[in-house]
Image 1 (spheres, one colour):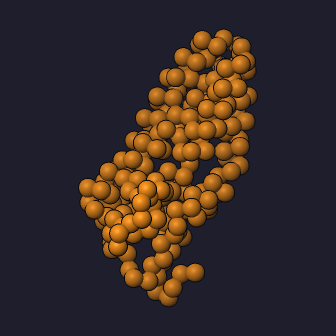
Image 2 (tube, one colour):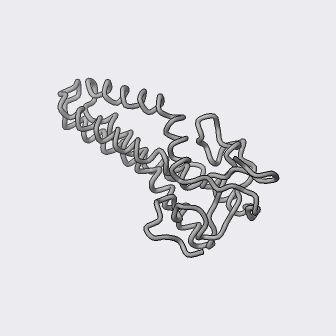
Image 3 (cartoon, helix red, strand yellow):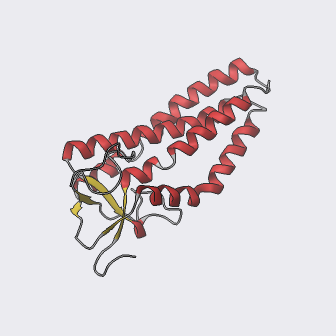
Length: 195
């Protein structure tokens, strides 16, 4: 529950990173199954096409909307003492619940596509996951450079608990580097933060 005068805040990097694992593993699994199917184009062409799709998807996802993230980062206001910081696990769980049907549909499409181009659809999914990890890493480097963690109001995220740089997001909030239970970039903290 949010205290009076405060807002529920989710870590920006955690929201970005939340989809990386599911997309990566579903993609790897779909590509592994897809390579077993000869397909219309044959395995060799399928894997080569998949490798190209992996690289393109990773680059596009990693660099998409960076100007928007940068602008929101520059205008970040300090979080208030009544703001409630959402746990990393809660943020990731909300994203995954909100996107579970999209993930299932993408996995089914990647498997179905293997009958035409083996492994390509799975490698595309895995590339999207890798791109999200790269973007979260970029956000983490910005957070370390500015010695501040970036947060977004939970009610400004979309209905699936995603889009931390969407049109509804007016500004970010910032806290000290030790706030919350996630390290810069959204990964789990390896050691307890010193406050």
